[in-house]
Length: 400
Image (cartoon, rainbow, N blue to C red):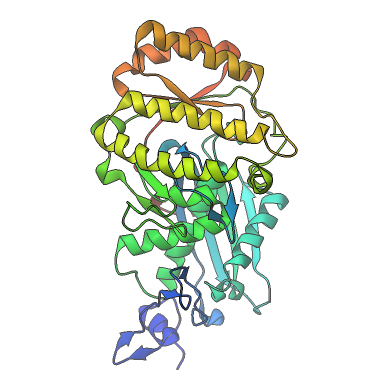
């Protein structure tokens, strides 16, 4: 008798029982290597018995304090990085699945962005899911509809790929639990979600954790890996747990050079080797700063990292510039404000012209007044987004 996979008994039958216990989910490693390998050809289903369902996750973006810029192999970083996970800037994704008439060689998926079919995002998502087939062979046995929306404008200088890919990865790992068996603990669940997120967008692997996260192997940080991010929130000083991040929208125009292309240009950058070593040292130091609450040194590293990132772009071949004149105008005013008031307001930049202003909650009222009175003039449509360090992703009820 074949039991429906929508029941616990059906899932057990499909997965195989040994003495009444579901076979353990293997976590494998390549021979003679420490590289994690989640490839599992046994993760298949009886597609004709699948009961349609849906899973919904909301996952935030993150802002790198020490930047990841340059990669190798299969989405592996050339250096370690550390980030704050944001709160308000997030992607809400619902993954709807049903049985497929016949399994094909490719994945069957449609994606709706803000309720509207989007062919570009559909193709990118399909490519991502097909990259995951060695991990999840059942993906080609099902048909998927993905509904996704962002809480922020696509042009806001916020890493929508980080929030979007992490939200989708979390849906997929939850789907694995529903079709097969629960993970041993939440840490194992999040590690796999981080691993899958990385394959879609490198920085996305940091978004599965709230507070602060590190991606990249650091000798002094237990559990750190190039394959997935790890949380460092437990060692975060109190002052950083509700740190503010206000994002000034200097320009909403599409970037002339994508982040993907920018990472590729690091291969021929004459400063690449020195930069990777510098970033690892700075990640180590930033972890100490975050632990001890040294706001001034935090800001010094933060701003140096932002300017270093854009210096690397300008020293690439061919060189390119993503900051705008108004970016520099705002930076000058931030420096002047800090000198005049002593308030610890510092900036960082992502791979674009828009600025992230970071500061402690104690000076929030004064800083926001400064933004309104002196900085909004330099923003397109006088727009900025107020955000802060957040608690990480959350699973939501599905809207039927």
